[in-house]
Image (tube, rainbow, N blue to C red):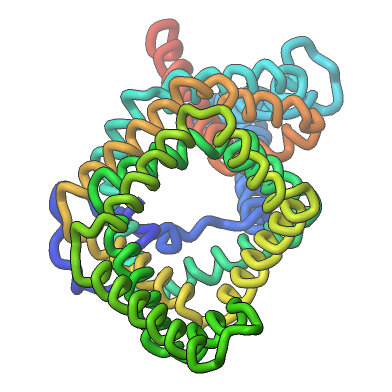
Length: 442
């Protein structure tokens, strides 16, 4: 696994607790065309060797009366022919009927491909898809460190961001806007609109008022009121003159307006200056009682629900869901299409930082490796039979003759050595048997 994330540099230092694996690219596997060519050459060589044994047999058989030592050559060539023909039959019988004759127990692979596939799947399941085997292998690989070194490189972090952008863009194109809006609306109704607002708002307000966090808001309101009174002398006196009877002289209106303004101004300044002013206490009392009523008074709770219904009626909720989704979608598309966007930069930075932590933080890497090992163990433990069944089911779908050709292409070259070895061993056996018989019986 480490090789999959190796960047080809030697700057990472010696590996600790991991086994360095050769990259897959260093192993050159032959193509099917090369395998077929090699198989034809080996078949030709084995057949030529059989022909050579036959030629030697004919010559030695014809000359053995004139040259007695030719009997040994004849016996060797005869044994070589028998061995070559027997092994040709054995090898051929694996893949097809020899010479087209449907001899029993021939064409083994085409006839029993389903059983072979099932046996192969069972073998893989028993010997490879074992939780202990998988955990032991992962323990020697160090997946987290390899992934971390790979992610820590800017080019790879950009690649992750690019692939993520493609995935997000594809998902946004597949998603139906109406369906997403329905989901957002249903979630808003379930978690925001359907529950009553009064009790939770009352509980939150009670905590705020109890801790005195609202005093700053009251200070702000009183400061604004004081500023308004200070800057609006004419407005106050004008209101007083407008409210007085028409028969009152103008100088009286002015005097009354001046008096009212001064009293109002002194009152506001007093409230502003005194933290324990009775107006402030009255406001505290009112707010705390309102918080209690929101939690326990049915009438106040009903009023809060009425206000909620007026603010968030059905059309507004639908419009809110639509605007929320379109805003999120537009922002995401704009961000993922712009490599200089803040989202892109932060995401790639986060990927690099995470990779560096994985590569350098032994505790984090051990934790991640543990998660990977647990996940792989769970998958193998739970789905090992289904994974192995892929082998048997795939073999079952193959054509019998095509399966035979595929297998012969993979191992047929090596099997031709059986024919060659059989020829050589048969010749030696024939020579030894004839020599022993001649020695014993004369």
